[in-house]
Figure 1 (cartoon, rainbow, N blue to C red):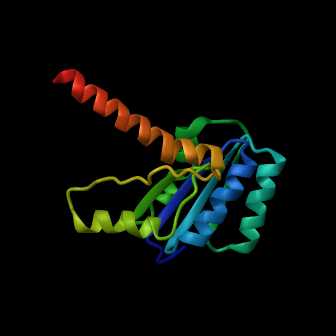
Figure 2 (figure 1 turned 90 degrees about the vertical axis):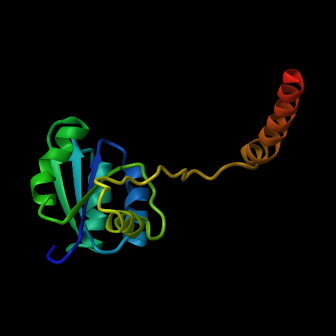
Amino acid sequence: MENKKNAIIIVNYKTPWHLNECLKSVFKNTSDFHLFLVHNEADKKSLSVSDKFKKLYPELITVKVNKLNLGLVAGVNSVFKEASAFPRVCFLNSDIIVTKNWLSELNRAMDNDSSIMQVAPDLNHYYKESLFWRIIKHKLIPKFQKIGNTIYKNYLN
């Protein structure tokens, strides 16, 4: 854990599939970190996911298991003292998928402006969109917005 700049805290409550996708993205797209994974009222499948990543990255992950669902804030607090030994602490939900260099971009924002006290990653949409929704989102909605804008402008004149 020494010499790492960032602590990442993830609180999980019975979301093994999401947690697996989240952890895959974190370990693929993140450097200079130590992960604190908190299980609130852990289920067997979620524990299996964390065990898999603990075996792959034993020096980069600390797993805390709470017998009860303490909720997000108490879950974070259960490892916060240990995490706050790092210069920076980042919180992620267990259903977040991070992208390449996400944490270094957050750190850069803080490094470049001393008035920034806190930054947070934007939520990512990790489900593959079907062709149907891509057509609606990229073709039909802009078309209707253009028609609506034209009607609105003509109505005002």
